[in-house]
Amino acid sequence: MRVFLVLLLALSLFGQGKKKKKAVAAPAAEAAPQRDLAKIEGFIRHMNLWTPDVKFEIKDTQPASLIRGFDELTVKASIGERFVEQKYLISADGKTLIKGEVLDLTANPFLRELSLIRNVGQPSMGTVGAPVVLSLYTDYQCPYCKEQARVLRNNLLKAFPKQVRLFLHDYPLEQIHPWARAAAVAGRCAMLQGEENYWKFHDWVFDQQQAIGAETLRGMLMNWAPANGIDALQMSRCLDSKETDVQVAKDIEEAKSLGINSTPTLFVNGRKLAGTASWEQLQKIIELEISYQEKNKNAGDTACCSVSLAGPGVK
Image 1 (cartoon, rainbow, N blue to C red):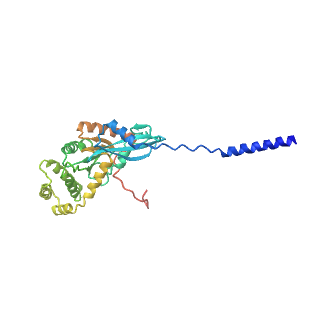
Image 2 (tube, rainbow, N blue to C red; image 1 turned 120 degrees about the vertical axis):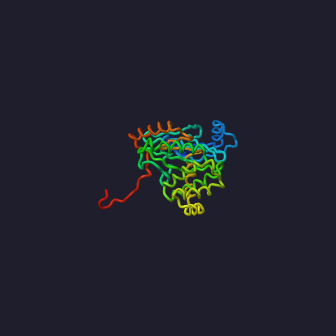
């Protein structure tokens, strides 16, 4: 009887222990801390000496492709039309900020810039398929752009007749240059009558930059066009319809996406050069890029090519 009671007590205690074990809840997963955006903004403002009148914006956040546990953060600071963009890496807990970019040695270091630059359909000069591409963002009313245009027109194709192709992009700074956008639209109208006419217009506008005004541009243009083989009536209709303004608008948006805040800005196979560059500087950069592309072949003119379907006699 005593043995039976002992056994019964043991079973009872075992059952209670089993119930207690089931009753113990698993610890709740710790929630990831929320990032303090105000603290991040305050930290970056302090680091850059950005005063309260500088507008601060976190443009984009996405997982960092090469560093696990970090996100890529793009910050934009602006006053009016002027702006700068900076890239950061931020940890998942929001406690660590890394300034700069993580680069992939197997890819072109300027891959992002190359992906944003739309050269197809832009006014161009140079060799189709060249290993070095210059993409110039310019403003017809900008005196520094006039100087950069002179440097390129006088030297580029003489020094590099086969290795370089130059594309022009419009970026009129309308806040400070009242007739720059109208000139960009007119240049595109001239191009509708042949690319050679675009370059005639390009050189004429910069040559007459000091004489042109917002009220005089069209009259001067209408006098100049027929004397240079351009149909003035067709030009006038194009200006009235503003059919080429959409091209200029696309260039402006593209320039902003690239973080351009001044003209001239030149990209050499994606490498950004802001401000006027001397020919000596440009020549050395282009020579280095030609040498680099001989081995790497990860940039150059891609606005040259077309896609066709295979068929009889076509490989």
